[in-house]
Length: 244
Ligand code: NDP
Image 1 (cartoon, protein in one colour):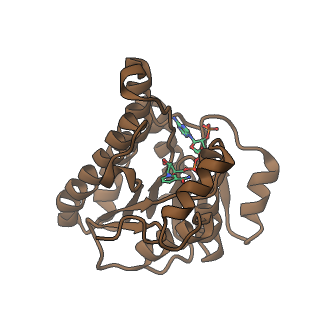
Image 2 (tube, protein in one colour):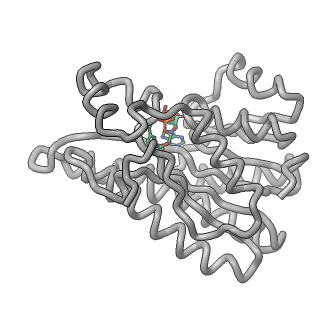
Image 3 (cartoon, helix red, strand yellow):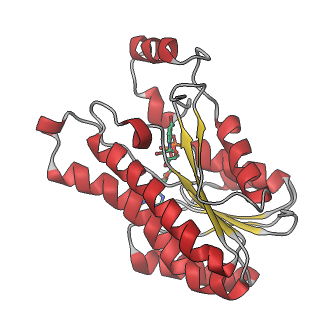
């Protein structure tokens, strides 16, 4: 796919990995739809606009079907097409199983997995009509390996991997692709809450001995959008952490 003038929606793009993915696609000449639950500050929008393409911010909570539906309608009213959907919005609510509340389990499943389903479901009909486009879903290595204190998060990300393969099989009939990225430990707000000691311990267990950066994940998203013959795959970006 040549990304020039394409329209790319990135959910959860007010900061971190999502914002970097938005910038990477803008650099390639794509128009960008930013999204988060609240309006994104002007200075962040300006950063993405600096690459010279059209950038809009459509707030929506991915857990709310009506909100997602409205966002997809706004995109088609504004641009008339949608070419790449990056399902990046995600949250963590870590805790050991015996102390994890039902609310914390459900909240993480709702944002990460149901939110991804909602965005795919609401954009599928117009994309079927277009007969072109791709989905890129943000999974995690813990969806492959599981993790202590992250039963909710790991379940949501394993679900995303299964969802990705199913969408890839169904939507291939209409020339749509669907892939996932499974990042390892990436330096963002989500991982900065870990103590310095814990971050050092984790880095020591990674073959490349460091956390990844947001650019390394964003580069992978662009690659998956550009390559028209990859579908149903989960690409790990983890410094070798989960290699077999
Ligand atoms: P951040 O917490 O920095 O950013 C999360 C983004 O999601 C924010 O823009 C947030 O905006 C948005 N968001 C949260 N809930 C919703 C919602 N219901 N609707 C719309 N937007 C929402 O996370 P990261 O950048 O670190 O992570 C991005 C993705 O990558 C996530 O899916 C995460 O699970 C995954 N990942 C991250 C790793 C890491 O090491 N950082 C490792 C593996 C995977 P707002 O709160 O304003 O709505």
